[in-house]
Image 1 (cartoon, rainbow over the protein chains, first blue to last red):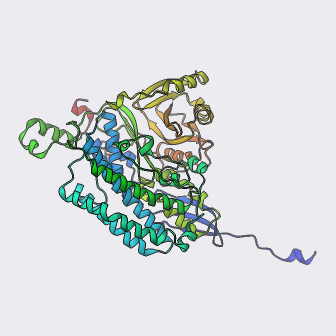
Image 2 (spheres, rainbow over the protein chains, first blue to last red; image 1 turned 45 degrees about the horizontal axis):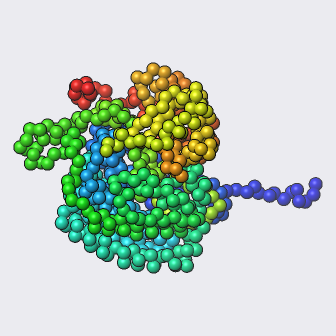
Image 3 (tube, chains in turn blue, green; image 1 turned 180 degrees about the horizontal axis):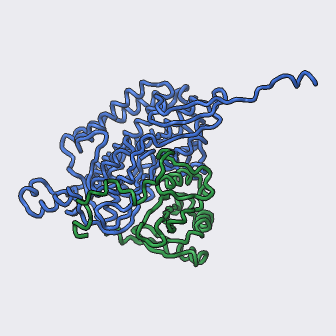
Length: 398
Length: 173
């Protein structure tokens, strides 16, 4: 027996690290059980479902107009896009053409929501690299957006805005005033934010080549939205299948090349500018006319009519009690949400509630690539990758 | 223009090609709004999916979504799966459906073709109890592991059974 055989060589041991469920760096309730070799991640195992609220089941018991508030709670950073997506799905089912003015108002609100969504994601990437001040400054602009929402629909976060058939009310003069203020002052604030991070050496070192994904893998994993575009695929639902008059507007689709954290940051930054461009065009070319289609079965009549006319009273009663006549059929409608293609697959059997409603939630679909994206990287980079993917717990778990 | 009247210019061409290859597998073809909907036999599912994905003329390389269906009244096809594929280059979308009886919920997994099917199938297993044969990690995803039923099935109504004030029959339906 030689000496060398007596030496005990310890087997390599990995450290198991629980990142989450409630960890301040993950911005939501996500658990990741990470296997660590020092500070390098060997593998990760995400657990989701902590805020699962069974929306698909809930929707089978609710009349069509009462499903809009559920959609608020999916991607709560850009709730109006979810609301409009749902209204448009039902409009497609019942074959209702929404007036141009309502479509333009919807576009303005959806693009404002997209800016608010991207503000959160981009500023949080800054926070996770250690730059807190950008986050604090740019959140003032998000506040302005929420004030516009407040003026339009009375709510800030869970907006429940729009109705099946159009908008519930037109923009008030105050809303126009706030919108004009926002459009005037947002670019300079965004520029300030951009100057803070974009060419900062520290920020670039922390984000370039962090959590990259190739275009092929991204497509195989079902990525859509800014995360797919950062990988270099120019797919945008607003262009591929235009809805709500998006074909009337001129805007560019920014794409990245590496699919890393920096590219995702850049794509979102540029999209905010493009959204602003769309808002400006919509404000300039805002058509006159009604704000709702003539669908009395779905669109609540004006209150003064309800108190004075029999027919309006009947419709009011039927809608409030959820007794609309819905045609049979199955329909899929997708909108470009803050995180990608937000799809609604609806089957109606003619009853008062959907027979089946399935949400295609972009977060849920692309978050499964997370273990692959962080493998071999540092723990601190994993945090950045997660925030740059903009995983929203509400949309993830639905 | 009503959205229901939308014409799909490429539908005939794609469906013809599809028919040549899988004549017996296709049970029905129809158009539902802006989607071609093809119902196929369950045993041909994998062949059809890989044909649609890999054939250069088809090019449906992107799995948009999939979801389970439960149709209690449909004899011999109580459970169903819906697959929605997309051809991003030519901007085409297609929907496939399979149906199966309640006592045979084995479905071949699509994870070999698309890694994204992993969580989607786990969700449908969780909700409906489909057994995805060959799935690498078939566990519940949104509900807790201890749950002993599949909540999206129609026999689990959301409100209690004693409540009848909102029944369709009361409103002449």
